[in-house]
Length: 169
Image (tube, rainbow, N blue to C red):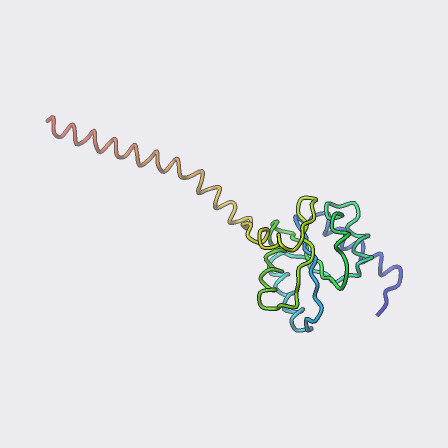
């Protein structure tokens, strides 16, 4: 069904709002996927904080103009689905990467992060980034390690001093 001008403006505005807030984006070709497969992809996207949208390339180019994803414009060719990471930088890449493992018809074409467009070979690397919670947990572990080591060292010193006092007495 063809969109009228007002409907096109609404689509462009909606995609632009998500593009302004997103951490990263992936454009993937979905040719050959069934409605059931696309529905499953959309459900997973909602659960993982990824905005997913099938949009005409001409409208997508207008929507990402002026955002850090403007760099993707040259790669928007063919029937594409756009995935924007809304919660952490790797969520859209993880979604597309994981779904493509079980559906060879979903093919990543362009990956954009921090204002730079990359080809699909960078998808796995972006997908391997930790989630926000994992990142916080890693930072906390790094911060906790020296304190734990200091506590163990002090406890060992105390034990040594107590042993020395016991031997002296």
